[in-house]
Length: 516
Image 1 (cartoon, helix red, strand yellow):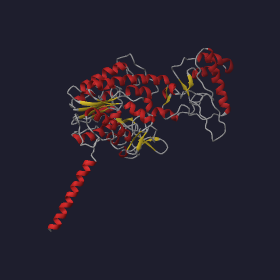
Image 2 (cartoon, helix red, strand yellow):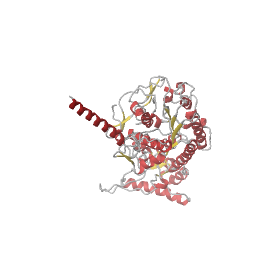
Image 3 (cartoon, rainbow, N blue to C red):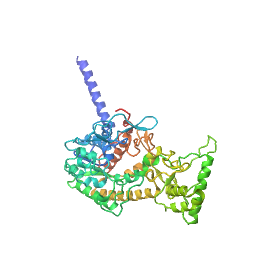
Image 4 (spheres, rainbow, N blue to C red):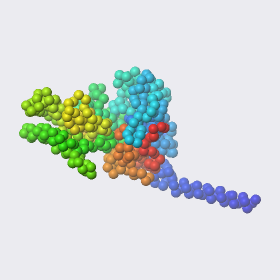
């Protein structure tokens, strides 16, 4: 008995020693030392932002997406060093979408059926007017722009059908007159994250520049839904947000705004997807466009069209022609085209051709003047334009792609200028307030160029297959959100002396299945 007892005692010591050694050699930290919060206090973490903060993915907000939000990943890491509960205003289901008074106002999420993204089966069950009670740590509101975080009544359900309030915030706002910033500060957070400003340019970009660049107009009350926010107005709003959040000594982390041209919504469809044309069609269009080019040259204006390539009949070669697009920034030469063509084709046809080609040109793929074709435009390229006479009715070939399908080079420059101004403000405020700063812009540029690797996996921006983005082409996939969480953790470590370890990409899927 004594011998056996001695053997058991030695075994137990061995077990304890192995356990201690395991903790010592494989700590859950970035530097091999015991995990620490550093100088930060994560006991009350509150997250503010838009759809990215909420965990929006695959064109919808749903339970599993909310669980995979970068903010929830951060909260899980914070919990290891004293972080408290992170309450999320969960949707009702994994279908996604919203009901307002029983009527569907947002569709369900997408899934990849092997050929294309399509909506999942089922009907949304999340009713906007069914109010959630209590306070929530995740205050990410899909669709919110910077100034919406300061807007009283942005969560008023009565304002949703009028476009005066946000349906996502209406579900969990503390009152009909509350502000998102007040719902945050009322919780007296010890730590916060703020990632806001993406939508101040994104809606302009995803609409193909159909909004207005409001630079110089400091009054957001006069803006349309797809307008670019005035950088000075953004700066005032952003300073107010951070001043409120840090008033009681809270520490935090902020992130800048990525260029829209880093996401697959703008980079998946090339500018030259048109194959070689039948010889007769190529000849007819080249004669027409060549004549317009000659007239432009005669008027000392830049040419707008390239010579289209005909199909050479060899299946081993692939000819590529650029899209025909409408560019509202061009001088409108409709009347000149009409006048020149009237003797040739008659007044009716000449007037029609003048109307569709007056601001038309071929899309550019050159780096310095690149146009960006929206992901949503891929389904209409090559289709027949209703009501347009043949042969001038093939969309993208003989009928111009319209403004809401293309972010032109000029519009892209407007977005970049505003983004750079916002980012200068964010960086400056982070420095002045002593906050951790995430260069999300640089991170997504890297994802779009070389990719970012972790745990044997590389995340890129390739649509569907790259792992970084969901099926809407704008919002991250689960693995993309893990990448973002790592960038936030790294910034927090650098600023506050914590030593959080990166989460492993391998623990996060690329795409959600049809059924969850």
